[in-house]
Amino acid sequence: MTTPASTQIIEIDLDALADVTGRIAVLIGKDGKLDSGARRVNKLTKGALARMIEAGTLEDMKSGDVKTLAWPTGLKAEAVDILCVERGAKEVEARKAGASLGKLLDKKGMTVLAAQIRRPVDLMMGIALRAYSFTARKTGDQKAVGEVTLMVSKPDEIEVEAEAARAVVEGVFFTRDLVSEPANHLTTTEFAKRIKDMEKLGLKITVLEEDKLESLGMGCLLCVGLGSASPTKVAVMEWMGGAKGDAPLALVGKGVVFDTGGISLKPAAGMEDMTMDMGGAGVVAGVMRTLALRKAKGNVVGLVGLVENMPSERATRPGDVVTSMKGDTVEVINTDAEGRLVLADVMWYAQENYKPRAMIDLATLTGAIIVGLGHENAGVFSNDDTLTRDFLKAAEAEGEGAWRMPMGQAYDDELKSQIADMKNVGGRPGGSITAAQFLKRFVQEDMPWMHLDIAGVASVKSDTAYAPKGATGWGVMALNRLVADMLEGD
Image (cartoon, rainbow, N blue to C red):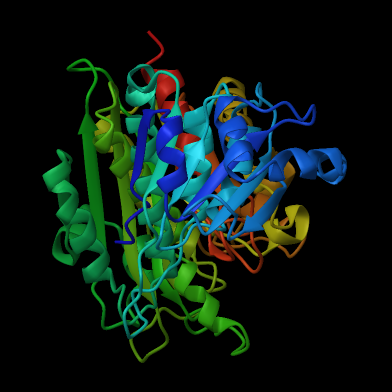
C-alpha cells in the first residue's frame, strides 16, 4: 500500500535550525507574533519574516494560507513556508492548515516549528493525509515523500495521541489505494487477499467462498456476479478488543470491484469510474485496519461483499426473481441497481451470526444522492435517532460531510412487485431513498441501523481539504471516532 509520510515529534532545537535541509514551516497567527522558533528563523534570515509581516502580508491571508520564501539567506533549507494558523485552532482547522503544508511536502522532507499551536498532532495528521498520491500502476522510480519532523515543547506528552493519528492515516491510505486500483488489478480475489493479509495486525479474517454463500442461500448477492469470471466472496474482519461477550458494532460494505451495470448496461462514457464502486467495502477495510493498528478497546466486525457486475450469457436478466438469505424474493427490474442486492444478504448474515449492538452499511449506491447532495456530503439514512446523532457528531468533528435524509412508507410502497415480495428499484423520484427503503427490509426488528450512501464523496474530480482529486478515504475518520465514542468512552 501507499506508505504515509514518516512523522516524528521532537523537542524544539533552535540551534539546529540553521542546518536543517528540505523545508522549514513556521506557524504565525493573524496577530503576527513570532514564537521562539519563528524568531530564530527570522534572525537567521536577516529579518525576512519581520519584513513580510510589516509589509502587511498576513492581512490578506486566511487560516491555512501559506507564503513561501524560496532559498532563504542564512539557512540550508530550500524554503521557509509561513503558515497562517491561530494558536488555538480547533481540530478540523488545524488539520486543514496542516493539509496546506502537505501539498508542499516533497522527498526532501519538512521540519515544522509547532511549539505555538495547541493541536500539533492534528496539524501533523493534516500534513500526512494530504501528502498522498497513487503511483502503484506507474513505471519508473516513484519517489516517496520525505519525513515530517514536528518540533514541539513537550514531545513525550503527545506521542500516544500521535501514534493513534498515524493509525488513522494508514487506514485512510489503505482505503484510498483500494478505491484507486483498476479493476484488472483489484479483482475480488485480490481484494480478499489484501484483507486476509491484515491477519498480521491481529484481525481475525474469514473469507466465505461461493459454495458457502450458496449453502447460506445468498441468492441476492450471488445473482450480481453470475455474469463475471471473478468469484463472488464475502470477507469478514473481526476485531474483538473489548470485553468478551459484548455485542459488536457491525460495519457492512458494498464491494463491487467493477460495475458495468450488467444486462442493464451503463453508458460507455464515464464507465471507467466504476472501479470505485467498491468504495463502501474499502472504507470498512480501512476502518478495521485503523482499529487494529491502534488496538481499539471495542468489539467491531467488518463484513464486505466482493463481486463484479458483468454482462454475459450467465448474467442475471431484468425480470428475474431471486431469493435472499432472509427468504424474501426480489424481482430484479434493473441489474444496475446491484449494490442493494449485495448489501441485503451480507447485512442479514451479519445480524444472524453476530447479533450486533448496531449495524452500519456503506455503499457507493446511487447517482441520485449526488444529484441531491453533490460531492460535499454523504447521505445518511437510519431507523435510530441516537445512532444517527452520534455519527453526525463524529463526522462533523472530523470534517467529513454527512446529511440525514428522510425515509417513510410512501417511499417503501414504490418497491411493490406483482410477482415477488419486492422489486429492487422504485420509480425515478427519490432514488436514493427508495434504495435505503429496500435495505431497511433486511434490518431485523429492534436493530439500530444506519445506511451511508457515499457515491458522491468516495472519489471526486477535484481536490478536497484532506486529499488530492480521486479517492478520498471519506468515512474512515468519522467511523473510527464513532467507535471510540460509542465503545471506548468509558
